[in-house]
Image 1: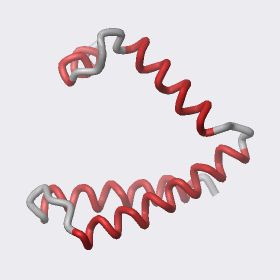
Image 2: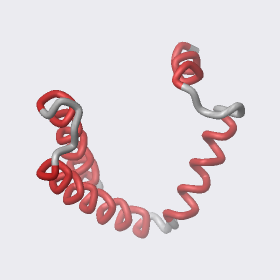
Image 3: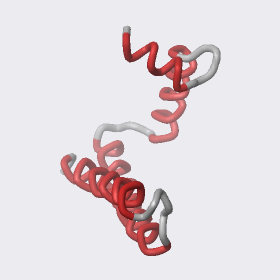
Length: 87
């Protein structure tokens, strides 16, 4: 079920938000344990989805790096990302 990767990813984001908001931007051992658990689920579902689509995750990662190198030929900076977002 492709929705499961989204649900698990949203749980990772929720824990990250709580670390920023509630834990003074510190990832506590308890929060880290929860994030690890949810990231494990994300990886599991993402791998299953990729396999179902006949995709190799290593190839997907390499394609993403190539895309980002084209997008940011001088390397990523926050300024470059803001400029790109404004385009």
